[in-house]
Image (cartoon, rainbow, N blue to C red; front, side, top):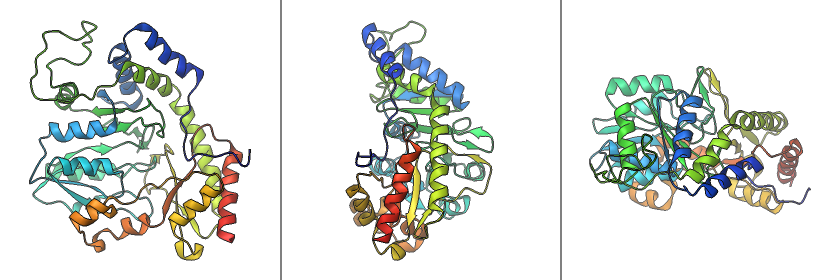
Length: 383
């Protein structure tokens, strides 16, 4: 229906998804148990990761990483400002200093060169972001981090199914995935910490559940040891079996989801190529596989004679939801007033922050929905 609201994103929940969650509820074991363990195992198989730890959010994974690495006052953590605020909030709450690397103007991702400029003797951690479903040029970034002896953790919240030079993101190094409802699969809320570092995986498992010397679910005994003791202060970030069961069911369909996203994105690209005032992101100049988490455009605010916020409002009046990914973190009120950064160092970030938005993209969309979005854009630009 033409006037029906078209959301920016919507999870694709099937009857099978619902039934698998109901099965867990009927079982009487609702919290972390067999389903969470199976979800971790299947996620390892899908991504190629050596170790996976299921968590209640990707933000929890980032918090646990900072804690496991002992990052705090006097330390610097290098990441882009073109990201969601949670990472920078956690760095700040740990007492460390966020340092922002600029991004490539057309892929919105950090590069080895922009990161290298920001490295100092205080840099303890580098967090590149795989953006919108495309991978950052992670090979040279990994090499650079290793040369400097700096830990590298990849923000893979957008990157389930993304490939870099033939390998899935998650197959190597340390990566954190998100299962928020707008992501390529969902557990309602949830995340997965993936790493090839066995010691780090053990630390994350311990810290996610109060710092006990046993996981929230002991795979050997089918429960939690009543004699488990705290080995270090920890948190409560485990994923429930209800959420994990949904994740398993969703993971079984991830390739179908991503295939539908790819077809919709191709339709967007073909139709938007005719509009001078709208430019999608560019393809990375290296071998990659796109998961199409988001379809991001940049609005030429001069040709359109309007701000991106005005454009989003115009789309809303036509019952079309549009996302904002992202307003640069350093431009948010708290960080604007506390960090007081020189905008000259983040030119590409600020240029894009003023122009980007995300069009509706989710597997249950129809091709005609893409046509409706593009026609609305044409109408707004003509107006």
